[in-house]
Every structure is written in C-alpha cells, then in structure tokens.
Image (cartoon, rainbow, N blue to C red; front, top):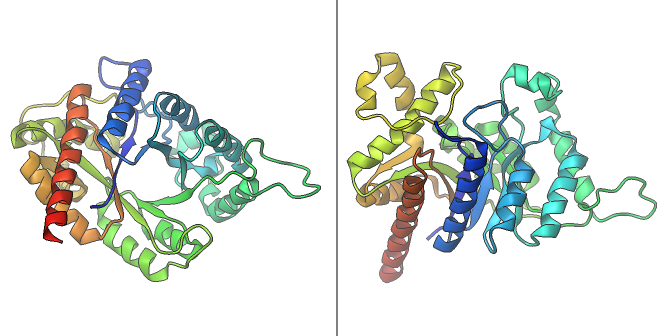
Length: 336
C-alpha cells in the first residue's frame, strides 16, 4: 500500500488566531507522526486571513522542533517570490537542524493575488524565470568549489530533496524532463490531473535525483464515523472554495447543516468542479474513494489535506484515513 502524507495550511478558524493555528498544526504533526504518515508539508500563501503558513520555513522549524521522525517540508515554496540563495540558506538551516527529514517542494505561482505579489516585490513575469531560479537554487545546494566567492551557509553540499509542484501540465513537463519527483495539486485542480500524470510519466528522464517517475497526488479527505457528519465537516471547505472564487477574504468558517441547500445553481456548479479532488464520508466511503482514486491515478503516494473547522474532528479524520489505509494494506497482503 502506498504511503500517506499530510498537507497542512495552518488554518486560522473563526474565533481563533495564528498562534492557535500553529499550536494545532504542531499537534496534528505529532498525531500524524504517531499514526505513521510519511511527511508533513505546509504551503506558502500570502495575505489570506484563514491561512497562517506565509513564513513557511519558520513554521517548518516549529514543526520540526516538536516532532522526531516524520519528514517535514514545503508544499511548497513559491520560488519566484524569493532569491534562490535565501531559500537555500533557509532549507539548509532546516536540514542542519533536522538531518534527513527535510523536503523542498517548489512552485512557480505567486500564492497570492496581484496586489500582494507587488507587495512581495515579485515582477509580473517572475513565473517565466522559474527554470532559471531552480537551476540557481541547485547551484547554491551544490558542494562548495575552490575559490567560490559566494556560498550558501548552511546550504552548500546539503542533500535537500527537491520536488516540483503543479496544478497543470506545465509543472508535470518541467518535473519530467529534469527528473524530479512531482506533486500534483489534485485536491484543488482535479480537471488536469490525468493529463498531467500522463505527460509526467511519458516524458520522464532519469536523473541524479530520481531513476523512475514518482508522483504524489493531493486529495481532500473528510472522514468521520458517519457520512452525514463527514458531509457537515466538508461544508467548511465548501465555504472556503466559494470565498476564494468570489474574492472574499475571511477565516475558516464553522460547518453549516444542509449547506448546499442554501446555494444557487452557479455556486453549486463551482462546488461540483471541486468534488473530484475530495473523498467525503464514513470509513466505507473513504475506503471506496481511496481505492478508486489510487487505481485511477497509479499514485506513488497521497498527500492528504483537510480544512476542518474543529481541530479534534480534523485529528479524527486523519486517524480514520490511516486506519482505512492499514485495512487496505492488510487486504492486499492477504490477497498476494
């Protein structure tokens, strides 16, 4: 059975604040570590009131200090927002603090709107420089050479695994031709998922980092003891989806009973587009959904996200997902 990992956005829930979000994320990371999840990644987003992970490397230092074995990483760093040398120094620092545990996922989107991009001093064509930025980052991670005038300290010579993130076929192609592992954001962009996977596998070129293609797929899992409770929990995510689409800013909202009944046809259509990237329900439905998703994608790994308002319910959802995984693994072993 393929490994499961966690993607956390450090959600700030209505009635809470960033400090509580960070405490919850560390608690979730410890919970995931105990359950057997492989990685705990956080994502770079800016100027979004409900997401506290803007200073991604700082959050990862917090998570790393409170855990022991789980891999920690960025899912991801939006590289055109930064000087590559600074990212090499930041993740070199993390690798020195937590050796053998750090991943660096890279994306080319701004992780923000246009006004915020300007505040970050990101120029309009920054995404076009992504290939050059990745090459520069690899330079700073390479071992120091004789007479090298500028060195990333720490960073130079450290083996920090790099992943390419994507929500389209562009990232898939870049990851393929350069021989990087690929993480696809099917949890929010399921429409291009299969095309991106096919392109990645068909065009993959072995590299010094990776001999065969390795695809990790994002998936929303909202698991509970009953289908009805899981549907209720999912309504917080649905509210976030609509808020993003309509440009509304706010914190993660409490769940709403019969939420879809309050919506018009256009809003329902928006939510329907997002459903292929979500598995919602009791253990039975989660098991069926996981089996279908894994068979459809041939994923090497799943990275699970769950924007659930109640932190205890979020913990329960990740626990149920891992228990389902273990059940599926045991069934596969018996069948072998």
